[in-house]
Image 1 (cartoon, helix red, strand yellow):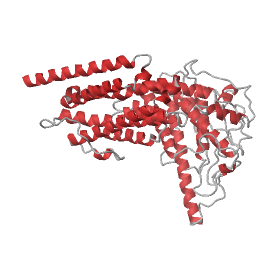
Image 2 (cartoon, one colour):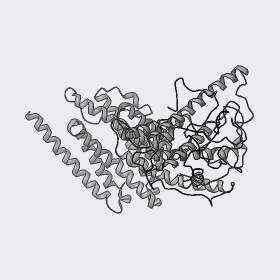
Image 3 (tube, rainbow, N blue to C red):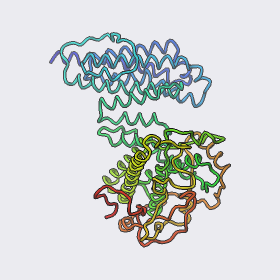
Image 4 (cartoon, rainbow, N blue to C red):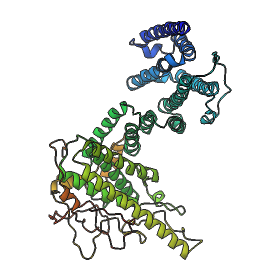
Length: 541
């Protein structure tokens, strides 16, 4: 007992020593000229003192002070420096460029330190995690702390979580290299985050860091997926909620900037990029409306669901042949945007819908019924598309086993007509039923939902290039605020459903018919009777 008290006292004194060194370091970093002093010799010496004291505290008192020593070491040595330079980069570019080489050396030293710390921890506590660092690294150097006595369960638990955090820190350092120094280390950062997730699958922090790494890729859709995954983890990171709110607010602004267009003077590849962009922007805006405690208008929400489903079915029909000259290469200017949506992104969209449905049902929000119907319809389109692709591929190989994939162009879908193997991207009606638009969809909201807008830093350029080729019709464009009131969605109005109008030959989203009040409403468009669905799968009750 006396020995334990003595060890606790020593640990407390050592922790106080570390805190005092960290305070002295903060004193210099809080000055106005900190960005000029951050790599000066006296600051480097002070950071080295903090690092050595943290290492000593970490291994001599792992259970009581190991976690605190890790946090102090990471923040004072690397995180605070990165945040300081991030602020400086926005204000004084010349100063940031002046410290480019010292920053590169600093981040490289951090990578070396955490590689060695990870390998030392897993060997010191026999965790069998040596294969988790599979990129080239140097041999392990002795950190200076030897194991005293057998390892307790608490120490082993701390060591495993410390390895988890080391992988997160390595990912952050690779991300800093990519963001500050423009090095090709993004894939290494992503690999480290996934490795950290495999060490501790219940932790949500790796998903939050992946969201930060994605940036504005696919108009913030990828980052939104990872932040949602973080919040749905067993141990979520609370900061992801703020990150998610920021993206959803940005999604609303981006959607409001979409401009109407007819698309008649866009080339096929440019139209394809525009369709994919409209889908991603509208889909993310829809997900922002399907959040608990979010105010919405029922008719507007239903109309947006319908239009997103149309775009989803259309964009699924775009695919690239594995061989043959590409049509886009013959154009004067390469299209800006995304010609094709990868399979992983489609998977993330479906999972994002499921997570939002779970949140809505858990909170008892009013949007849960339209969210469920929308998700089921989206998934049915995806299953139908996969089934059609499989059948088309089998039929093609049967007819021409060797030359099945040969073709003159790279586009599977011609600009003016649907592919023969696919149902038309527009929504079709059966012979026995008439087509109707949804109730509550006015001409004003129709113009708003067919608008298009930009997201990243390159979006303004994209708008300029597109607006010069299309006939703009912004005089009738109307903006809407979904925070005006809280609408309620009737379950009868949702589950009773009508289809959408027939697609035009040129483009299914170029022109909409006037609104006709339907007898019944649904998110599910009418499809031919030969449409394949999973056995027992029903969209309507």
